[in-house]
Length: 235
Image 1: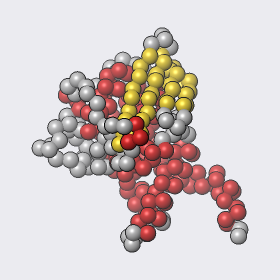
Image 2 (image 1 turned 90 degrees about the horizontal axis):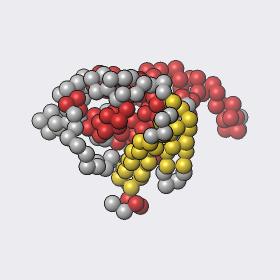
Image 3 (image 1 turned 90 degrees about the vertical axis):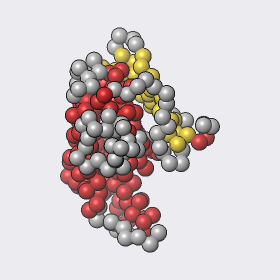
Image 4 (image 1 turned 135 degrees about the horizontal axis):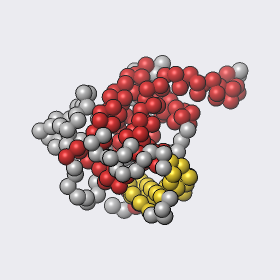
């Protein structure tokens, strides 16, 4: 596809021994669907039936593989023998900017796995797909919550404009994250048999922390940023 038709991310991991691991991700710029690349036959743990999520909406007769597991299998394979706390330099290159950080493997993996998990075609996870257009690698919890709530409220505005009932109280956002927690838990179950060390498992656990405590984190985030809203609150 022409570069104007794709949203592209290049993740470069430079390990402490000097070795480099590169991962290119291309998404359809309009739908944000992951554009599959040629690869080896996916592993057994990537099959939909292997550790199927309790809330999975996909039919095994139509989908041999879990779409998320299928697409992350190459990344998991590259890091299956690494521990979560090992140091790494991660560089993320997009058309708009170049970002980098000295961090742990688990944080770098959390960042890249977050893209795969919401763009691969999982009906549960793609509720977060709008976030990928403005992907922020290495985001803090506060930044993540702000982006999630902002995204969700913008969606409610769109729903209202289209004559549908908006959820201004964020009630359904909690329900969405309850489903996401189940997917994260089952994905961790898959990865226990896909890796000899814990880097990838811990990376998913980091993503699950946000899903588990989102309601509380929203209140914390509001207490931090509300002071900057004064020009609107006291008009």
